[in-house]
Image (cartoon, rainbow, N blue to C red):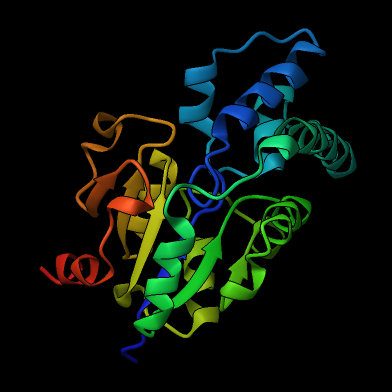
Length: 222
């Protein structure tokens, strides 16, 4: 199976929105008397699923129902904050247009819940562009576990070795590494230095306007 695929994380990658996620988390925790460091929070949680984060900060005694209710409240707050600013990352639409013209499958692999996937992909009218979508509802474990990337590749009909992941968070790049996939890092949220330890990173860019489709796969085979 030689079919190639680009697999995109959603938040911080397809859309440059992580500052709004962090703001909504800060507001969410502040309402409950918790004060958290924004930078540490992002580095330790980006790519994890909502129920994993709730368990970390509120304890493992949370019931599944309580965790789901808290997660729904937080994500609703995020969508309210980000809705007026919803837009694709610079160069993204042109990039996936070139990729499709080159016969490359496109997939989304995200820790986001279904409501956020709908909010982003339908809000930007991008759902039709993707051959496969995998989200939090499809896998039990968030990143750095490789599950969501492996599922996205399977649904797109590609092997991990023929798939390139686009990410903005260290936990996501680690998940790609565990999946046997190369990664392109977008510095929408963290500087390039935050990814220096990863041997599966083939490019670090500000946005998609800096990327060439053919050069990426050439880099991935070297």
